[in-house]
Length: 99
Image (cartoon, rainbow, N blue to C red):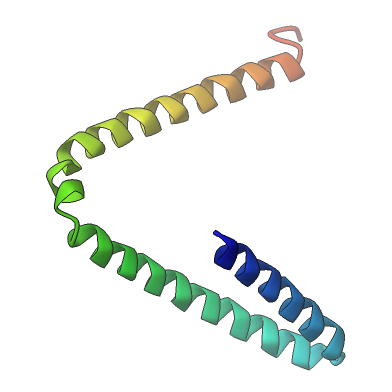
C-alpha cells in the first residue's frame, strides 16, 4: 500500500515539476497530447494484465456466473435509482407540475 501511495506522490511531484518547467504554449500542447496517449495505452495495458490475472485464477473463473448476475443486478438497480432520483430532483427544481 505504501508503494502505491509513494508512486502517487512521485507522479504528483513529477507533474508539478514538468508544469513549472514548460513555458511555451506549443510545448504544453505537445506534452498534453503525449500524456493523453500514454495514459490511454497504459490503461489498456493494465486492463489486459488484469484480464490475464483473472483468467489465471480458478476461483474467480468458477464464480463468474454468480459474479456476473450480481454485477448486473447491482448495476441495473444503481442505474434505475439514479434515474428516479434525477427525475425527482428535476421535478422538484422545476416546481412540480405548476405552470
